[in-house]
Length: 397
Image (cartoon, rainbow, N blue to C red; front, side):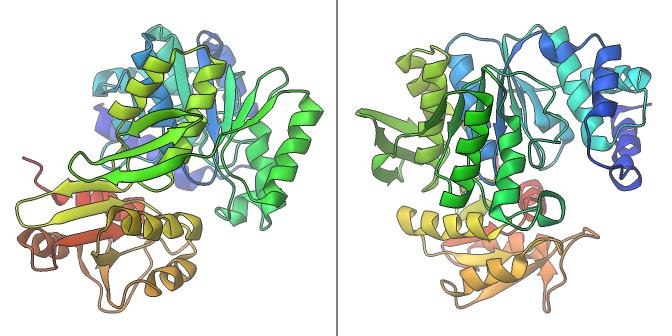
């Protein structure tokens, strides 16, 4: 059985195994595998927005410091192999297939799709003897499959409304789920949090008797267009980030604070931040006829960030939008309509996609964008699925 076939088989479990959230099944499987998650140091990252950026930056910083560093993130754009990396290199199809087969053999109670991936990640990282692994929580934190580790440092990037059907419909409930990654004796670093969420996190940290840090506020923030970099100052040090966007300096400040707790030297922090990259997070792609901006923002808080990003970078793009029907796309569109007079809707080949009138095939829209027919710059946003389709169709040669 090829990796692609095996992946399709376990992906079915995303729809067929809908058990109550708890960690019993994955703990049993990991025990049968010899608890590989305990064989290397980890950084655990939760939050509504900014998780992927912080994970990419943090892994790059640790690699720059000389550590063999694993990275587990979600979702993927094109291949699930993107989710699992060591020092920036995707897992091979054969290694991924072998890891999944090991997990299925160790399965005691049926695991869902994300649990299988998570257990496979830990097995793969142990087998390859990583020094550190940066682990992104899937949804929430407290009951997330990744919450079986005792990390060296925990990070909560942000708290806002998303996945309300699972995490709760108030910021307090959502914050309690995110704060569930806080472990006794493990320091926690936070980004900027709303007051109600901040109070929950502070209370949780006090109960666990752990030090809690809030990242220093960056200053002198500016976009360097000829290099596609963000330049900013944090606590008297000037940094550059290869991941662009108005919120990225704060994400970088979170990473700088976490790196300090891990005794990483400032030079490695600077190098790691500058060389970090992450697709579909205000990703700027320059083509002969136009500039394409791809951002997987898929909730209101992230969409406000997109508006801030284009203002900071000085773009005046044409907007292409698509969304999943289970997301708060009405609020996202309300935010976008305050900035854009015209919205081009893309029709996604996905049963979960929201249906919009006059939506056009993504392939047709990309062709026009690349030709310059849609203007000098074009922004694709609203969903990682739109970002993935756009990414597949763009010729990067």
